[in-house]
Image (cartoon, rainbow, N blue to C red):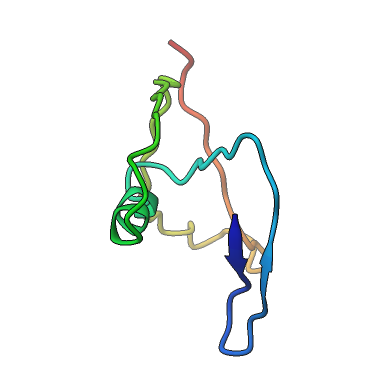
Length: 78
């Protein structure tokens, strides 16, 4: 496998591997890149980890400490 480091001056190097795992998620373009290079489609396996996430902006209370950097709130477990 040939790899190139990120950045304009990234060097290229080769790694020998019997197995390569790409855990790039749904938006990974790895299969597209391999197709463009003429490589056969890799065997894929998708695992549903049954995880989800959401985000929301919260306003700090007026009497809240000005030194806060972050706040985390966990929801109830199913």
